[in-house]
Length: 145
Image: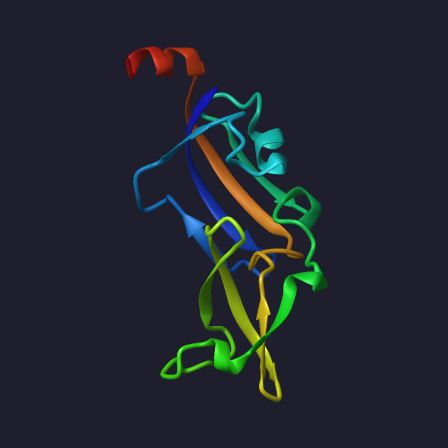
C-alpha cells in the first residue's frame, strides 16, 4: 500500500524531531523495507481520515544502544585542521565504501571516542499521524509506467 500522511515525530520530552505539518504530506510505501517495523505495524490498516498517536519503544524503533558501536580513533587519523568537539558528526567509509556517520562523544588522551549508534537508539519515539490517502501499490506502479 502507498500511504499519504502528515506526521510529527517527538521524543518523550515532546521535543519535535521532524514534522510534515507545515509542509507537503509525506507519501510512503508500506512493505518496501524503508519504514520502521513498529511504525509500519501501527499504520497498517488505517484509512483516510484516521488520526493516531503512538509510542514506539527502542526495540520497535531505532533499536537499543550498542556499546560495541563506540570506537576509539586516534586523533592523528583526522585532518589536522578539523576542530574535534563533542557532538560533531564525522563521515567515515565502511568496508563497502558506503558513508557511515559517527558522532564524537568524548576523548581519552590522544584517542577520540566515535559513537556509530543511531542518534535515536535507546529512545522512545512518539508519532502523531493523520492519514490523508491510502491506495494499493499496484495502482501507483501502473500510473508511473
